[in-house]
Image (cartoon, helix red, strand yellow):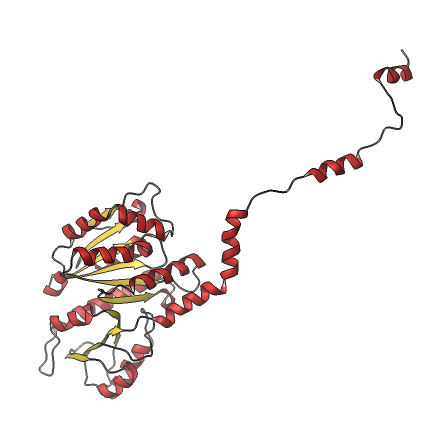
Length: 354
């Protein structure tokens, strides 16, 4: 491993988080945490920790995940200390719509910051696509709202499952982009270089982080190509158009007109640039969290609000309470009436003789 790989680690929290972190298993220290043994068994990994849970998994129940974190926090902190002791920057990977990852991510981040104040903790958070059911959508909003309000937080990569029907393709694309950006300091050029400390500044700055890559053999359209790549992400939630940004990093094949690009992305506090012979990489750091995308999740939940309420209420009121006395009355009304009136069995016997 090179120096920067040794500084970065990943924790896969829950099934979605485990699938993301597994992309980095061969090059980074990774730890996998889940309340489901079955989910953990699907991963070919070195370090894993099963959170004891009699029911095996949280079943989209965020409150249950929080409870498990409270019960087992000492063991969780011990696992991180043992497996990721040397890593300076650790990304917690999780799906926002599930149970274990969605519910545990925020309290886990708070615990980690308190336990390891000399480390940075960021997120790789996955948003559900628009076709997901109301429960994952609701979980996603609650989860994102919680962790985005944590003060001590490094960069947050927000993967959007709307960008591709195959979530594993999104995971692979994210891995490729991340691998490209951590290789940036390996390039050296007399026109400019980006060292590890500058890359770390981009990765550890609080807020949303966005990475785009594009290739062009025409230096005349480099500016428009970079701008388009920032506006048409194939992995991340779309960036806000408020032009709020802390830092920008560029690894380039050709020179750019930074003033032209700033008209779209905003004016960063600082910019780091280097040059390479492969493609053009843009890193936007300290961005506003994707409020527009999150608001769409809220809209989808609100659109089905009455249906959700009725369906949930049905689980409490669903019972048979009506009586069926009217059936007895009905049966009496249709019962054939005898055409004679006997006062006793003797009368019947007398009728038919002895």
